[in-house]
Length: 401
Image (cartoon, rainbow, N blue to C red):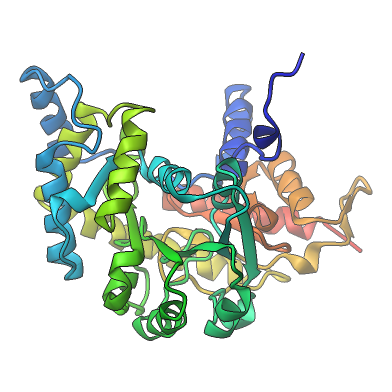
């Protein structure tokens, strides 16, 4: 009996969530695993946000909302774009979803015909390509090596277009590399996109507030406003406000696209959680001290991780500008053997060895579309990071030719 569709068979479970689940199972068995695989802040959601959700429940705000989200939250998101990004959207150009991932799925479900192509620079977030496949599209992955800062060039972008190109995706700050596109780099890519009027742009800006260095964040539409009517900006409250479990994302874009997203939502989840929307409203409209304090802590953790990784012989690292990930090159360890004589030939095998022997969970670069790397999240305590990095150093040192 056939159960799974061919589309579902063509994808894999999220690699980062899979590794994290294995790490949790090992911890449950009493193994001292430190999980650096998952991109989840270790901070509690700020108290005033929790209190707002509680008061909303007491007030009876536990029912369905409009598929697009409440008017109050959509207006708050529009105000956020105006206040922080100098972008003018109406509440009707905002869609609220059950996490940014759902809005990404909705965008492709609403726009892709079978065989349409989506240009995705690699390294890319693990779910991008599979969400495209699930919606009948073809991911066109462009390798953006470390030598060019893990960034897409205008020449690469121009060469990737075909008559089937439907979308181009950007993610800045980037998961997994932490790179940030500058205003000038985005503008140069915008010049290329301007010559292809039938192509949509998706700018994933979920790590907007987590800037670690001197490269300031800029929204794609800020950098190239002429493409506003073809761009969907994706964001949410998960990373900035430590609200991953609340499942609340938002998108801004042209009215026709947002209307299509809302239509899809009316026939899938119906609407986002009313309680999570009340919490998100408090996050966006309330004090922003937590965002600043959390970012300062991520910056300190990032400095710790960078120093430690740069001190491990054989690893090289492009220092991240944003988000809370390090993406070291581990190619020097591929082809080596464990003390038991097992050959480590891929980054996936190295990640497995680090988990089984070093008790540290990481994610392979191949999961992000580029081989020879591992991704470490530093969204955990400095104490955990110091222990985990020591284990990584010692576990790698145990490998030999």
